[in-house]
Length: 265
Image 1 (cartoon, rainbow, N blue to C red):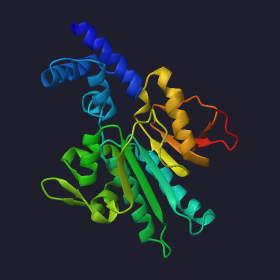
Image 2 (cartoon, one colour; image 1 turned 90 degrees about the horizontal axis):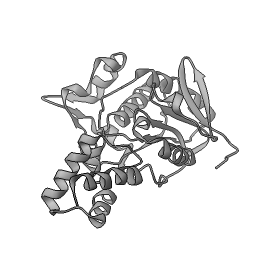
Image 3 (cartoon, rainbow, N blue to C red; image 1 turned 60 degrees about the horizontal axis):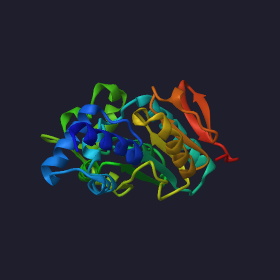
Image 4 (spheres, rainbow, N blue to C red; image 1 turned 60 degrees about the vertical axis):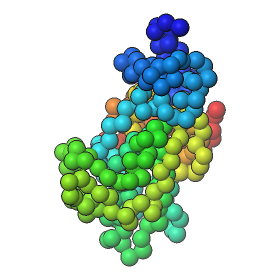
């Protein structure tokens, strides 16, 4: 095969397996890596590297830092007492989808732990956090981050982050947070293994999916939500969401979606 043929095969595989339109430069990097390690590219090799997630290291964007888009964390903090009041003794179940190296999931846990410090009866919670890329999930489980993981964008929550980050040359996550978070590898083109989440954070990832794939991704997310559950998207992504099961909402200039009780697939 010629180089254009390889590029075409990998480009199609990126959409078929991951639902994304990959950057041409990233496709070329993956092609070079495959040729260097396998000497050729065929359908069996492509199936292997995409099914195992190895290709994700070349084709996905893993931008992450603590308390990114702080307006969503303010929304969550206001939601916590409402949930606790209406769901006594119930566990709050949250999913962080496309979590990259884990900063979003840890930020959520930091916020809830801070909330619990001011309440006699703590809120029970669990966070599932996944990404397509096995490499970033390994980093998330280690909970060790560089200086750029704490930025001015989330400055209003710096005081919370500093309670749970041990700073030396790098930031190390407080172990109290890890026991509440389950990190795992998952491809959003497939249904989530767990269901009945109260909230799903799916931020700044939707933009990478092709128009053809977006309906499938939103359907998989909506199936994983409880009836009335909340889906929070990136600030710039909400206008692109069209799905029968997801109703747009606006509270204090925070746009989000709630799952409708009467599901239409």
